[in-house]
Image (cartoon, rainbow, N blue to C red; front, side, top):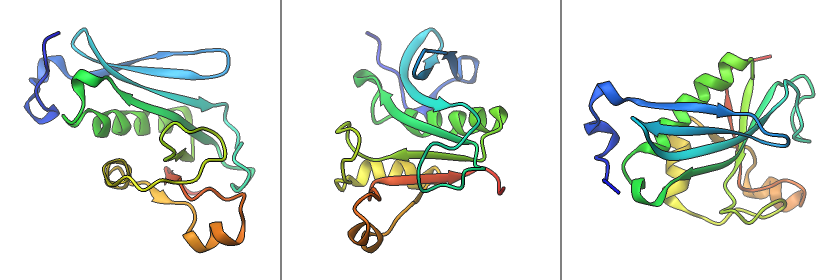
Length: 153
């Protein structure tokens, strides 16, 4: 498979773009550079709030998975994929985007420090939802939870 250059070196005629695939339980944005798939973001959105610590009036867009395919990693695609996803969520009417940095360990897992992942999300404008102290005092709060505010209620 032909390796792609970094996102900064990509020529503008083959810009990163996505196709939305709606599923029964989860939806997927498949990202392509030209005709080559470089990754995907799985998400849930139904125009409501489903995270227990959010205001029930929020329109939450939850990112459940960000994956850049192995041959395309460390070239800036994850950052660009997240930027396009933020625009997509805003166009749907979401007020907030949420995710958890949990390294695929699933529901209820706590955060494991990963400077690379943390930096991608922080660079993309996400913030930590809870402090270590808040999680210590309330075991139901996940230390890996992050959010990006699209617009105020």
